[in-house]
Length: 132
Image: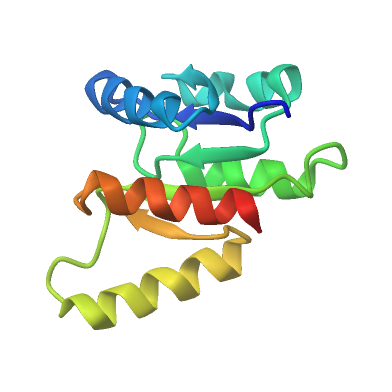
């Protein structure tokens, strides 16, 4: 059985390295893009089973990339999730999570995951997305 492919799009090289090591240990084949402008091209080239998008990036954010995915006939069925530091820090966590889930659903993402969650939980959620 071929390894599932994941494309990570994030402008934080340290986070890319950390999450990559963990996901490779899980058996995934990974590609990383640290420039949001290269994301669509890499998706077309690599054809990942899942795209993981940071939301806050310079010049072009993950939401823009998600909307491009959804408007591209070749990519519109591509699975993607948001994994980000962005959040509603001033709200209680349970309310913020409901807002995040609603936002992800409206944009077409499978999930909205915060980077400050334990790494094991992030990987568990990614695993579940790829089983669905």
